[in-house]
Image 1 (spheres, rainbow, N blue to C red):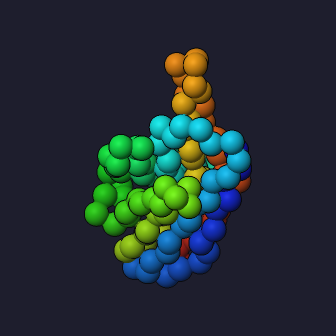
Image 2: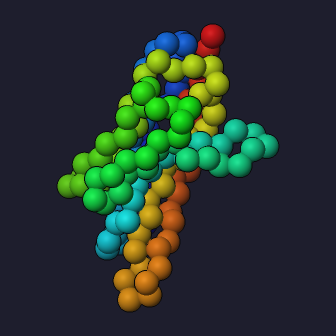
Image 3: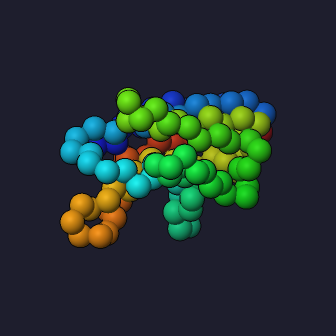
Length: 120
């Protein structure tokens, strides 16, 4: 399974960016797709996730500003980020969680990470 992220970059505070993540490879059954972020020296944290059933969950810090969506045909997940703040600056990682059929477990796959920088 490969995840390729795009859409990061530099933006001024208050601006917007849209991250995309395209999944390819042996994808059987998706549990969820989402975005995480990790600042240097800190743990990776959930930003937003969407389950295969369409339910979404957001970190409190991004509620009302970020929106996650997906295109199941293209196997792509998006993160629309509005009203960006300098504290949103960090590396963002795409995640896909797949059911391991026959094992009753799930397995996580990660993108390579993409930098988002918000200037004040």
